Image (tube, rainbow, N blue to C red; front, top):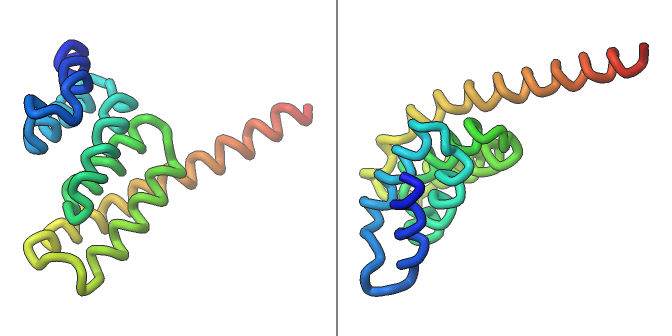
Length: 127
């Protein structure tokens, strides 16, 4: 997968660049094998190419959560939800709204966990 990612990156902007669908599939595989930071980088680029794809936004948030990038996950999810509920969102993309709403619970849980960890670290350092 690292080789596929390297090839994909080297072909960026060229006529031989893999399709958006192929690069999306690569990002999913990267997340499955624990290369979520690399998947996040790729997905953020893909989202710029197709800013109306709620699937890409969903995957960006998932990769950000897996990478421990909670602020990115929160910001991207907020933007995705706003877009999904706007008139600008294509009707066929709105099928992703339930998954995005479910992902909100995961982001909220990660935020609570991060706050609890921070408070525990403060208590440990004050001893």
